[in-house]
Image 1 (tube, rainbow, N blue to C red):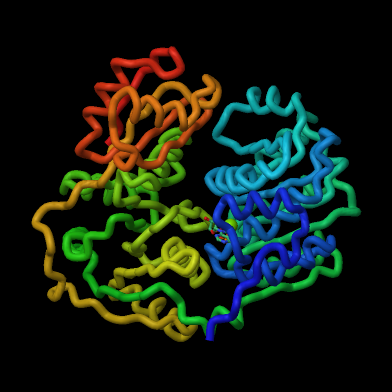
Image 2 (cartoon, rainbow, N blue to C red):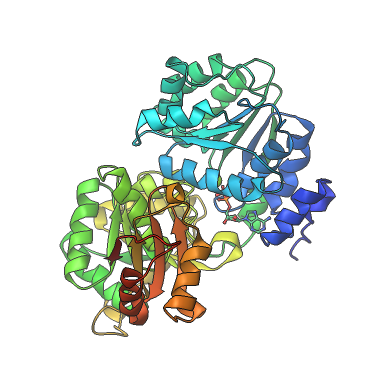
Length: 463
Ligand code: ADP
Ligand code: MG
């Protein structure tokens, strides 16, 4: 029987926070939130382990926000993340909830963006810093941030940070913090190396693990394998995509070169496929992720850069075009689908040389059904195009462009029905709006011919 979930007011009294959570549609705690929140609110160090997509960000985020002294404009909390994408995601989730009170300032500090603007932003002060270890260390060394008043340190996806070789940077960062602090370690996997780290950076940490419960809970992800020979992989993928017609699918490859090659193949075959890997410029990484998340591309071909923590709504299917090397990575990859109790599918291509690893996964308790290449019957001859097209506007937060302004122009001035307008993302200098494919031209022409907030902006059509 499914366990009854508990509302947030069980542990949180702050009524403004409770109202904000309700407004965001968060009524009940997820199991990891329920298991860890009371201890974190008490100020204990914890090590929390729970599967991906289980709501770990708010588990540490709520206590962190509730514990701030907003009037003291100094850095009180730090969240370290392995990748920039993840840091952005944590920041944005925290910002949503931070609206429960006025004037909380959260700064994101990651590599891949210019250093100086970050310094300028820091001059106005901040309460919370979220970022990647390398860049944060750089700021500490340049003395553009001061960690001597840190009350809480969060290591999100801690094992991944170790894998990426951030251990020394993290040590150096921690040395700049007071010893009296709360340290929270979060991850979906917990290899041995982490234990040593916990010993060093935490005090009498409480271990919160939902692993046992999760093992017995039926995973909402249907896993299958498709046996293929290396040379027929591309064709097999095409057949698979034409027969399953997923509206959003992440395809994982082993290498950056593999990702680029497969994306080019799919694109040539007429699929709306984008890619994500570490050699792309940051702006392209952000934009591809955004276009995939707003429905302007159904396919994201990616390296394991995308396997951790990224929370993209409604990913229907994950395809392991190449099997990963470890069980941890496998868990993370398939965790991109079936999030928050939704159903998901994960299909792994298995070549002869990968049989061994497949058997290992089976021994660990993963259960697979088998798909036969010959039985895949295409539902479509040609790929179905993505439902949305994105228009990019060359004005963002800096120009004080708001989602409401764009929505207003599109509905009132251009006469589009609200239901034809998808996600609107406002970034620093650009805004992106998804419009249903059939109406994208009308929206584009309309936006080109009119002004937003009495200003004329350049508009581009993407995808
Ligand atoms: P994890 O870090 O465990 O991988 P996230 O913190 O990214 O998971 O959360 C996954 C998704 O669940 C996010 O979209 C988040 O907004 C949503 N979420 C978090 N807590 C709740 C809740 N209590 N009720 C409903 N949705 C939630
Ligand atoms: Mg997370």
